[in-house]
Length: 355
Image (cartoon, rainbow, N blue to C red; front, side, top):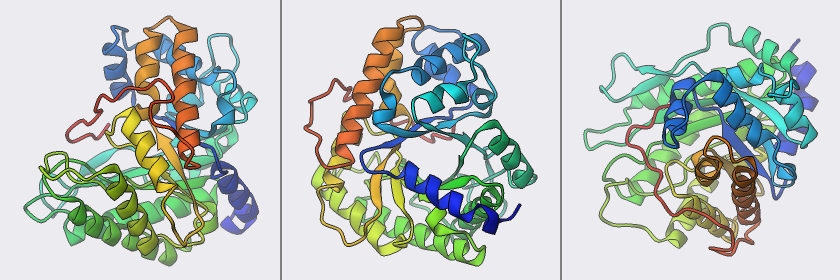
């Protein structure tokens, strides 16, 4: 098959994922990372417990009203629920499009600063993506990570290498029928101010789309998953939510092509409430570009849910998940009233978060 063969389907899937009022549930944590989450509630990291947790998420009645897609870890894509039905079928019954994390994690970037990385997993990706498609996945995700430091990171090498990797990934999965979510994350680590973040983010995203053009990526069949434009976690000058919203939209308008159907922001260590408030304000900010501005949250959708579930409390876990999904659905339309849904204002930032 070729990209031309899948082009109309890719556009249709991307539009479905970017439909107004809906966002993406990122539940693609690696086995090691989900183990840390389970340990926080005293639950052992076994396949059975991972299956129980993710099965709880995927059987939440009405979740599809707020969630258009769910990013899965490979184990989950090929897994069945405890009742024997495939996890993919559970999502499809809710009207949620299954997706898959396809990168193989971060590696040190040779020739660059010690903290700089590249994302691995391009070898054999077209073939793996075809297997994921056959299993029911219709979109993919690949996360590149860049860090701002006082020593001059990200370097030009890091920006170019990570942009190229994202573009190569995007073209590869489109060849097999999967919509690529392109994720150039700028970590919150550091003491830089919001203007520095904006300058770096603009440079990075522009480089990504230049690489996509070179690789012939069909932009109408993609989504962008950036971090919000915020100051470093150790910066003494804290920007207001209104400033974050204004500068984030300004940065996106300067760097994201209009042909991209949707921008789904990652929460990047923000608290559940802050992630909703910032997204809501972005959707109240006047902009020229017409992309759908929504969410693709992991921790900011699951934090309260995980605590409520506690390994066995299905109803309370689902209730907490649905509350955060509804809050972010409202925020993606600029209709969220802060505090109107149960949430946690606990900061979820983890230094050097690589999962």
